Length: 203
Length: 354
Ligand SMILES: [Zn+2]
Image (cartoon, rainbow over all chains, first blue to last red; front, side):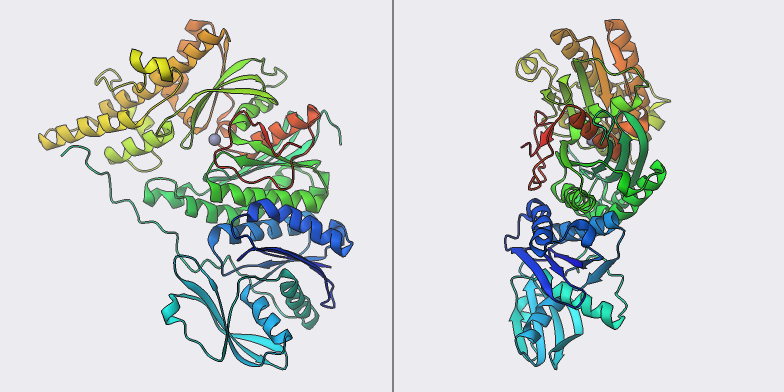
């Protein structure tokens, strides 16, 4: 069984079978309480799927893009859980779950996914959806809303479903896809400037 | 699990060190630290976002390294402990998220503990059969905190006597080093150049030590005024075109910090009638602070304890040690929904108590 975790917007945890069947998927939309809810979400997702921690054969982590503080919590949790069980950690772009959801609901053709990056900016990714399969063709990137280029349909998402992320990973495992060695997708440098030396205190 | 000697893995990410330690009761099995200090050097101080990013990169490898150092496998771990506060919020959350998931994956209890009390907990690992007697006064000094505690019982009776009302002592060392053109981190640099200086050359102010301050702030510290006094003194010299006696300034500044820290700590020992003082935190590496502590404690008839330096700086072993003490005292695990709390009060030794 795959345990999938994503905290790129709210917090979500899910258990997905190797065949891609979502056995449980829980989410909290609050974008400020990732550290509080992450443990209970994992515990409850396992319980709802009727498995124990030892039933997990791989952990899937949504690597963003997403606002830094929350995003890190899910990745840290996924990393630690995978270590604890001695199972692989599979890293995916969180937007891929949003595109897969759209494809599953019958969407076809070009799709632009955007999510809130705070500071009046958006994270975006572009997809081509054919025969129910979404393929990322550009992104993820970061823009101000006025510069977001829309091709085809646009989904401005406010949640990422870890169940969908887990299903993508399950399909990848079945197809023997190589998972990318992604780092957290912040898409922004830390907001600091190097020290310019001490300021005068006397005038 | 053996309640008297549980194997506890502790995770510490409150500032710029990613620390994972493993203990068996009061026995130290592993203490692995990955520091992001070098990445902060060009900013002249710890940048919270840089620290948090480094924690996420380091957390997995540091857990793996600690388990290897202990000669164990993760299946041998009886409980997971983590610093849930106080500290930098974004940094703490990396450790809290990792610790909750690790405990769940191993099916073991989870304990969220107080960073400052963890510094006191470090002592049990260094004691070599000579456990710390309580009550004790504890002076904890680092780049992130400057606190004076009265510890009657490490698991449930810790009182905050005083703390800094502005900069931490370690921050003052960093800022004065910058004023003197010395690199970050400032503590070892000040210590190095002060070796050739005269600590009595310049009488810099001792913060919150005047009679009027002592009424309300007997055990509180302030280092912001001291830093400004040093800056003013140095600027005056430079403006007059005179050379700055760097060694004397550094030695006099260091003396002012050491003096005020130890005066207040030993006042606390005398006032409370507790003849024991424990030092902790990275600033304890400072040679003059250690020497003055030995001198003043001996003169006052106070027993002084200073854990080895690797257990004084922020580390996961001290967090594991405190977790083991909580288990030994029969404490139930923390609630899994416990938050990271950047201002967790020192009276809360364990966060999320059921
Ligand atoms: Zn500390």
